[in-house]
Image (cartoon, rainbow, N blue to C red):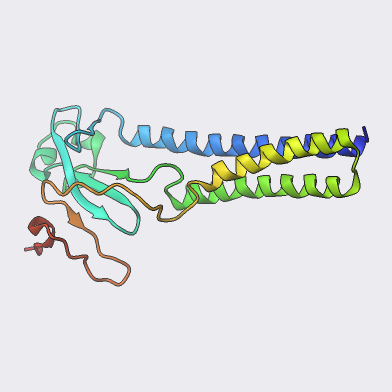
Length: 201
């Protein structure tokens, strides 16, 4: 087997593994940052609220349609009287927690890292195709084809969530006065829920 084919296959494999390594590292960093921001708080997926270390609840306050996230906020008078306030928040409006609705990569940073991973996989595919165009021995073709299939599967997995606004996203909870934030046109989205259509006093 030609050494060039072996090197091309090895390099392409390393690029695919590097793409998954970059994906894991970026997702792990995001999860760790999220755990840090919500340390001590417990999320209740059934009733869609957070509970702070003092037992107070943070209910959904706003759904940001453009950024695809929900903002939860505690009652201001409760937070302002809390003995832990200085270590928890500097806001006089109550502690806020932001929860993304979409799975990783849901943010611009996540999509940037996913794009880098896809670039590495695309480069691996080009290397395999270039090597396959130069070498046609059965064993060499089999090796390159195996790497190509692996790279194609990796690309399909990475592309799956590489969308700014994925289809089929979950519907935000409308309880407890949840508001819809302003859209890109500057107009607030109308809703069939009266609590969302109310105006600020």
